[in-house]
Length: 495
Ligand code: BGC
Image 1 (cartoon, helix red, strand yellow):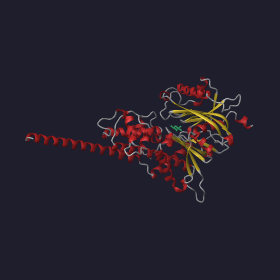
Image 2 (spheres, protein in one colour; image 1 turned 180 degrees about the vertical axis):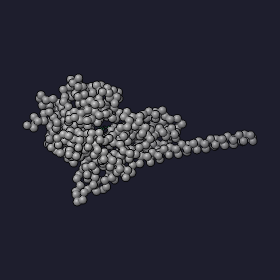
Image 3 (cartoon, helix red, strand yellow; image 1 turned 135 degrees about the horizontal axis):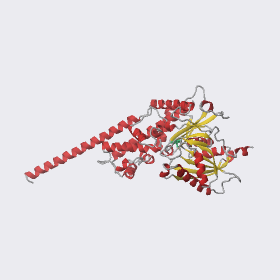
Image 4 (tube, helix red, strand yellow; image 1 turned 90 degrees about the horizontal axis):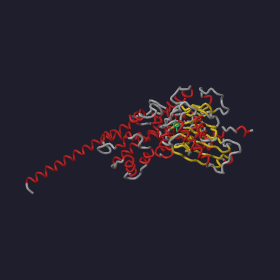
């Protein structure tokens, strides 16, 4: 090789080296900036026990305020008119309709009293077309009533309705409702991505009844309940130590049994049982102690209900995946986490659903294959192992914050009921919380974290008597049980 050629080769390889060094430096810079975003997220989402105690205390303060007066708190503390929970004596054929998420359920159950309990039950699940969740009230209720009518038409011989009787229904409507009786109530507002025209301020039972009439369906709603109330009723039917119910699903909420005389805003007669079930609507809880980030703030601002359901937006299944998407988007923009261009699908709100996040978070394969596949499916991007590890770390931070906050809420209820400690010389009362919701049921890292955090807050001794019991669709059966105990034929039967 001549001198010139050698010189040129040296110059070229030096240039290649320089480019490689530049690229490496750029990659390192980008990675450092992704790490910085992660660190900041971790700090802002931190929910150590002392903070959780402050949150639980704020929750109990708000519970008192909400019970004291209408509008006294962000927590509505709604009176459910349920002053007697199921006893097991309930008998007959009852229907339930459960509306509250992206699916609704219809259910029928033949109840056989103390001896035979649930003789037979059948249900169907129907997904609600997206356009009906933000359409008009008539369209939504007509769709539901039509599906219910189809289901009633398929009733088999194993179900028995005595001659001349009207079918009765427990309506689980999982939104904030101001009840005016056990079987009537007006919608306060929509949550969880619903925004249906012409319903707020209206009696939802009247709306459903009109729609059922339009379908030629002769059925009477004898109980209108929130899903938390249904879960509490279903839970109590199975276990007499159930004192509260929590939903951790698309949305989140809790209900519990309160002493009726501890509800200053209850102006009715004191029930014989001395008790009243309260629908807390805890999703709307807000406190300066809540660990919030810029992602939460932006999510809230751009939501259908800005400023509302803040606690729900930090915890529930509707939002966890969306928070993750927002963090990834910032990392893509500022740290080129997914390469030189931001994948366009990463900009689409709610593109990343919580079940996908859960699947990635639970990926135990050494090369995080599931994470890779999911990111490819949802955003159309290939990823390195390093990036996939980063994604799992973000899932962990977001999910554990949500789970720890949920545990703080449960601790707040236990505190309000005086079940958070064991008084001197007392044997602790067994305390059961009925739990329902897909987030808790399917996202194991989330539910493990709820339980371990609650244990940590209660301490070994007190936590030994507190049980969280998963009640799979307890709310459907619960609503049917409440329809039974408020049946129009109840007195006929008793006499
Ligand atoms: C609703 C509650 C409901 C909860 C769980 C919230 O968005 O406001 O009424 O109980 O979701 O479904």
